[in-house]
Length: 206
Image (cartoon, rainbow, N blue to C red; front, side):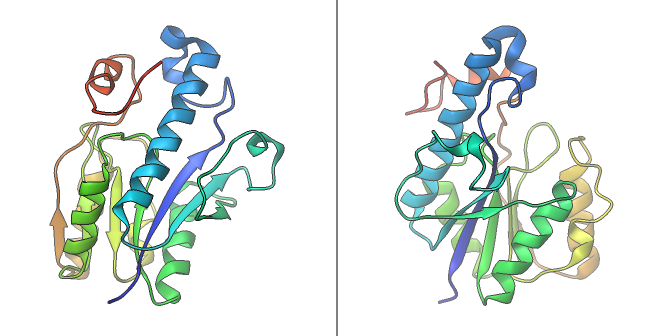
């Protein structure tokens, strides 16, 4: 079976630099604490999925002082997101994995609903499809899985807008690739999202 690599993109949970839209209700320290818990949950769920290697793709680089006090679970590979917009950074990570002969699930830390079960299902669906995708309620996607690489999936995408998932699906259709689309999930970005976060089993806001 082809190995499935889960690559999780994350910023260091530094107060004032992460979850900025939640600072008005949580404060800088509270928003950073939530980001740290979301990072930990994403890593733990990826490890629990047990579908293959788990890689944390970090900004800034893994050896930066911002990460010095962040304890990562054992068994996590680390990499540097590097320069460029989100598309360029995701493209590099996806291409690295696929060139190694792996298939890849690209995720972030914003969606606590992306459970180990959902990751396992996505990995299983990827065995029979060229790509898998979970939409987010805000129009983005918390997960994109690929068996092959094409730059069109990452170039000229209006990141952080409601058009991201639909445009990505149109690009996949233009390639003639088979795609499995999973549940629509909710990212935790805005104050209203905190009510949803509080209902997720095993996840705490504060």
